[in-house]
Structures are given as structure tokens and as C-alpha cells.
Length: 335
Length: 223
Image (cartoon, rainbow over all chains, first blue to last red; front, side):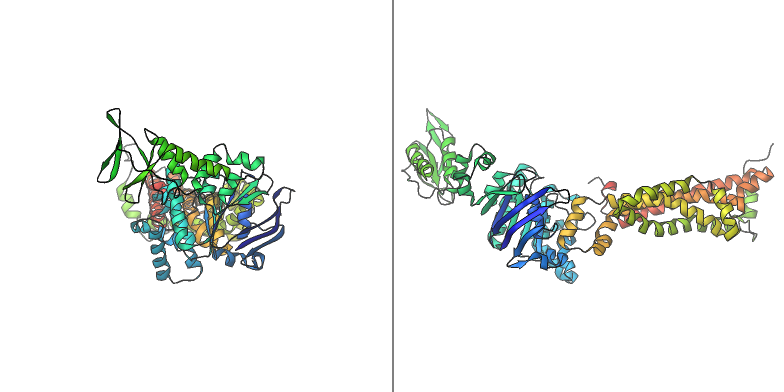
């Protein structure tokens, strides 16, 4: 667990970057620091591994004050990923990943074997190991950055806007990859971003910062969306937070009806709606894994408004009518 | 007037005839007096440049001093040094070392500046302590820029050595004074040709060295 206890960072010129911050990042979870630029989120992150030292207050890593640990030793025990990946241009990918194991004095063979293992773990082709960073795409470099941070298996991972410099498609796949890795590794992750959608998608806990280094609200993403603490948080969450809230409500309990005869099937799987003499598009969702938002999306995609429920193999389970969907959504709105 | 521009028989007779003015001896002296300043210059420029990159306030005054030295006529420096080091190669090597510093110190500073900030930051965050970070991250990344400076300094030094002929230590420059005094062009042409060949050859060696040391350097690859 990482604990901020009354932490303040004041610079020599009097600027206060972080003002009396107290919060906890629970072990094995992702805590996201989110806020506009100048809100002190990156400064707060960097105080954890002492890239910046706090002016007042304490930061505890599993109960131990980080100021009691020599900085280089502390940092070798904390994974760190930054925006442009920060890979060493003069080192091959395998040696980039093995950076911290080398610093910790592992022998070369063991360090490289570990690096190869991680290369695959983050979804990269082992053939890339002998390349130099400039020969990789931005998304690949970022994956190498994550692999490097994980190399010595640190319990804590700090991520400073790691996916901000890549295009939206790559960003989405990197986010999925991070969630997949986290479901296997259970690291204590502190993740900094200015993108509220990313925060809500990745965070088990989201801490919203406001300019001047104040904590505006800290809670789980669903609560954040339904009960913003004040106008600043409400404004920062944006206009469609109602819709986004549906992402956190599972669609498992929605009442399904038997599929009507207009639904055209092929081997038990939906093909389309037979309407007005033609085949029209349909939308589908999987009640076992999807959220109400996916169900609503499926309904909006269907020519007749009926969302088709399918199982993991694509077989039809039933359909969700507008009335049933409306009832489920209204239930969410009432809390 | 029907004298040929280049008299090959003169070259053959004077290539290696055992005299101190044999072309081969002059060439060897030239190489020593050209490369020693670059080597010494690099050894001095590394600590000075690193200090200037670390404490930027130093850089301005250091550059000012270097530029003044660079602007000084080599003849003036020779006459000052003559009273100390006499008519020796040292009298040529010292001013050329100072001249090379004017190129090499900025090269080291620029090289250190060329290390991207996110790379330096991530080295700190990985747990590098300052000395190891310098040796394993910053200096290797600075190498292409420093080597570019070394190439300029080497070529300049090769050409500047000939001025030493004024104090009888000019390497191939001796061929110029000899030629002018006798109104005989062959030595002059031989001198120019060998100096240009030496410069081109040294530059090619340095380019090869650069490719060998920095296979990761983006500049030379299209990938």
C-alpha cells in the first residue's frame, strides 16, 4: 500500500504544486491520478520514487517512509513507465528490458532470459529483441517500456501518462493489455493521466486533482460518475457521464425474451433482421461479460431496436426489448 | 618555362633518402603533430565539456576564452612558446591542442545536450546513480555528436600543422617553404596532395569508427 500523509510540495519560488495531499493507493489495485495540467498529479507520482522530494508530510510504502530509503535503491524496487517510453536508444530491446536486473547485479544470461520472457508477456515478437528502439513503432516502444518496468518484478509500478503519445487505436489496445497483465500480476499501480475516459477505464480507484495540487475527489469510477463531489469534478467528467456510468453495470440481470421469427439465424447464430422484405442490421451483446452500455449500444444498432443477446460462442440466447432495457437503465438512474 | 608541373623523378629521389627533409619523414612528423593535438584535446575537452554541460553558467565564459584563443594567430602563440619549448614538435602541438578545444568542448556540450530528457529521466527512475548514468547512458548517446566534432578537429589539425614550417616543425609544410624558396612547384604540389589525402583518409577512418561505435544511430539508416 502507498500512503500519502499530508504531503506538500512547495518550490523555492513559492509555487505550491501539491497541497496537503492525503490518500491511499491499495495494494494490488490500479489507482489513477487524473486532472488538468498543473494539478500536481505528476509531481505527486514522482514523489513516490523520490524523483522529487516532498517539502512536508510523509509518503509510506507498505508503512516505510520513502525518505528513509536511499533513492537509487528505492527506484530499483519500483517500476516506472513514462510517456515517450524513455528507452535507451543505444541499447538493443533485450538489454533495455534488462536494465534494472543489470543494475541489481544479475548475471547477463539470467537478465536476458528474464527480458525475453517479458517481451512475450507484453505481447511482442521475440524477434524484436535484437532491434534498437528506433526500429520499433510508438506502440511497440511503449510495450517495451512496460516490460522494462516489470523486469525485476517490483511490487509497485508508477506510470506517468504512458499511453498519451500514441494514436487512439494503439492506446486502446495498450489499455486492454495493461488490464490483462494486471489481472495476472496484481501490482500496486499508480497511473497518471489527463484523460478522464482512460482513468475511468483503468482505475480501481480514481483520484481527481484540481489545479493547485488539491484532491477534489477519490472514489471508485462508478461512484465518481454517479456522485461527483462538486462542480469541478462534474465539469471534468464531461457531458456524457450518464451513459458512461452504464459501463459499470453488468447486463447479466436483464430479462430476455425468446427471439422473434424475423431474426434470421444460421447455425444458431444471428445474421440479421428480415424486415420490409430485406435483411437489416442487428446489434448483439453478451449478458455474461458485457455492461448495460453494450446492451444499449446493441439496441441502437439494431434496425428494430431489439438487442440480440448471444453467448460466448455467438449463439442466440434471446432478445432484449426496448421496454426491458428502459427499465434496467431507469433502475440505474434511480440508484 | 618548359619545366613540367610535377617532376616525378624528384619525388622518387626524395621519398625516403634518409635526410630530415625526406617526404616520408615529413609525412610521419605531420601525422604525429596532427593527431596528438586531437587526442590531447579530447582528453581535456571531456572533463571541461562535462563540467560546462553540468553547470551551464560555466559554458559562456569557457566559450569566450576558447574563441579568443582560436582567434589568436598561431605565429604569435609559437613565438610565446618558443622561449619555453624551443624549436620542437611540442611548440606546434600545444597551440593546435588549444585550437582543437575550441571545436571539441562545444561538441561534448552539444553531445550531452543531445541526450533526450525523457531518456535521462527514465535512467534516474530506473535507479542509475550519477556516475554509472554518465558512463552507460549519457556518454554513449553523446558519442555521435562528439565524434562529429572530432572529425572537424582532425581535418583542421591536419591542415594547420603546416604552419609549423615557420619554426622548422611543419611536417609536410616544409615542402611549401622549400618549394617557394626555390620557385620549384613539385614539392608544393606533393605537400598539398598528401595533406588532402591524409585528411580524407582520417575522415573515412573516423566515419567507420562512428558506424562501429554507434550502430543504433538513426542518422545513417533509413529504417
